Image 1: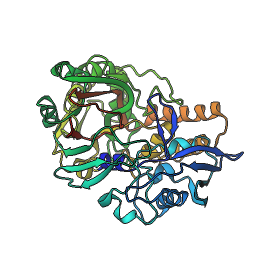
Image 2: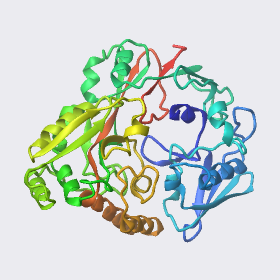
Image 3: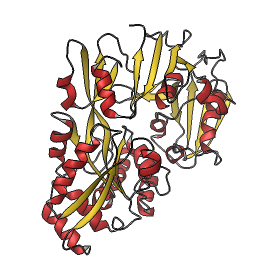
Image 4: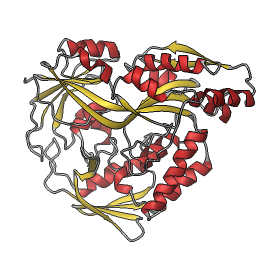
Amino acid sequence: MSDVLARAYEGLVYIDANGMLAPRLATEWYANDDATVWTFKIREGVPFHNGHILTARDVAYSFNRVLDPAIDTPVRAVLGIMKQVTAPDDTTAVFELNAPHADFPLLLADYRALVIEEGSADTIEQTGNGTGPFRLDTLDIEGVTVMTAFDDYWMGRPGHARVEIYPIPDAIAVRQAALAGQIDTYSATTAEIPLFDPRQFEVRNIRTGGWEGFVMRTDTPPFDNVKVRRALRVVADRQEMIDLVLGPDGGTIACDSPVWPGDQYYLEMDCPQDIELARQLLAEAGYPDGITVDLYFSNLSQTWATLAQVYQQQAAQAGITVNLNMTSADGYWSDVWMVEAFTMTSWGERPADQILNEGWRSGADWNETYWNRPDFDDLLDRARSALDFDERKELFGQAQRMLWEEGGTLIPYFTNSVLIINRAVNMPDFGYGNTLWHLVTVNR
């Protein structure tokens, strides 16, 4: 569904190909002296698919919904700092915050921070009535969803007349469909690149902040013991994982922090494999003869099974037995992830403030490790309120260091985004999420 929404709806801002914040439905923005009020000027003359013209009232309606406690939305963990959004005139939207936030516009680049028409909340998925380049013709989550070009799109008519979106839950089936020319784009690993004939396929390899890894519930034994968690993390040989799972130049080492090297608040750390430290930590935690854990994953990702096997072999060196449990892709995110005590996960690239609040703030909907640390939350709050960049960087750095020392997520690497594109089509950059939805453009 995220791929449908991304083509039908738009946000105020976005992150461009150079990693910089850029205008979309907003043309400019500025803050008051203490960064508690942000004003956005809204682009004029932008039509919704139904012909209505975008105004600041639509913007206020869209973001005030995030604050509605009756609406269950994980983006509230990111945008909950908002107090209210008002529209003093048709081209001005004013965001009042509960606390100073010097980087607030970055939060609005979230892929879910989309602008909808005032009063349309109950129909957004069914109608697709946004301002985006494609309008929704047929929605079929289990079949073929069809979208057609929006002729009156404010940036000009899209280059493709029609897009068909197929849900393919099995990673191997997706690859076979791509090799057979049945779909036009495929998210691959660098190890898979040789499978695709360069005469037929184009390869785009871009370093990103997307990552995958292992999740330990910090509220569940034995993972409620910080020494067990750290032992399970320091056994990882991260470069070997990249080489064996992603292939040459397939990723960049991560030290269990989700903040990637391209982020302004990235903290550089060293995290070498340390088998002796892992054994020592386990002994101190009451497991002198080693420990056995059950790891759950599925074939939603083409790399999870291989990564799990590599980790199993590395962990065994420290007396850690990892039982691998392959589950069905159907229902993984609802029945396994955030349910079982030790699972696998993957996330798309997000700015530091967003990912740390969304993934680790106490009580956040997607706090997958059930991390509950008031002192960590305080670091995030202080970083948001700090108007001095160096102070913010120091506070975000302390938060990342805390995750490396005590957290429940093993993040071995940041993945490169390898997109295989059939040369029969000219594929523009729409920005692809971490899903296994793939595109077929009909007018080749």
